Image (tube, rainbow, N blue to C red; front, top):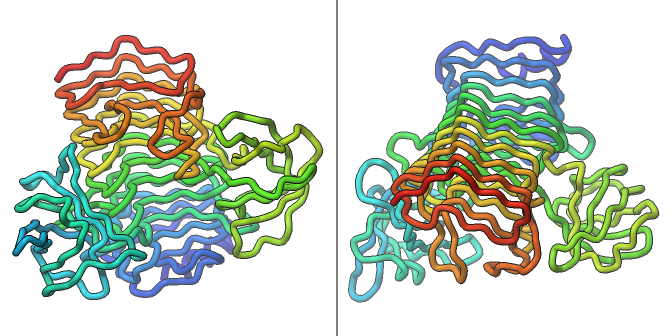
Length: 476
């Protein structure tokens, strides 16, 4: 039904699709051009408004929900969407004959696994403590031993306390409610989600991986479905790449299994350097002839820029040899960043971000404003401004960023590191979990923010220049 309507809109060069109120069950996926299956595929559409007020989209096929590729000027309004599968649950730890066991409240659903067990606060408010004992079991590790359909044992469970209430993820990342992803030939831009309400999902709720300009999430919510601890099992909103402006305004995000929002960009690894060519990896398929690429040393120091002059036909590899136009020498380059797929500006305004199991916001891109937001019960760092060369290969630094007039309630920080963090933390990461000696961020202005019932330092700053703090209040 939806695909037939999209075909008609494509032939008529745009228009409005009114989705009638009711439940829509998506039980099969449709093939996208390069990234797998999607429940609802929006491909190569322009100038389309989808009004889904009163419609509930139930993604039951185990693939991405709304998938947008190579589409421009798209507005989706009013939909409720979730994966109704039981993707996370509650449990309690129990020491039995010297072995720590996980006792689930309900049997583990068929086909799923124990991937993440995390200490949780008692009560019905879905909140997590600052000191977060947890056991992470990726698919590549030995899996938890099933004793019965509710009882499991694993060596990592010894990190958790006897009797501890826990939240449990039954997926290792997985599919998204909304995924904007370019093909090798096109891009999406001017995409708006307005009044969209997302429930529990197996992976990240909203992911953006595009070269296009203009993306907005406004007046929307993300919260856990009934009976589930998590909304998205991992990040809420995750921007991998974008070529223009990003607006996040008047939303309420909660209950994420990882960061509520991550605004980042891609760092590529460099190899096979020649005078006018270089091999780049880590999502190198996103790059195009004509892009301007900045190069950096092993310590993250800027070397210079070169233009991509040639590229081979793009296949499935993310490691690609590019020709470069003549320019500055890059013999010492270890890392690179494509300027054309780094977000230009962002605004995060008047949002509520609450009760995540991890951090609030990661700001790893330049030229932005965070204003008038409320962060509540975020156990780790509420706002982390940074770039991580190793291990995450993401970020362009928090440069020309202002954090103003935000409220932080019952905020915490990441504990157990070899350096201190605060509710707002600025840092660089060239080597994992170590503070480098050079500058990676700034200018930054942090002003007129209010910290209430702080459980840690309010502001901690490393690796930044031209940083201003004024008019902030911090009470514990």
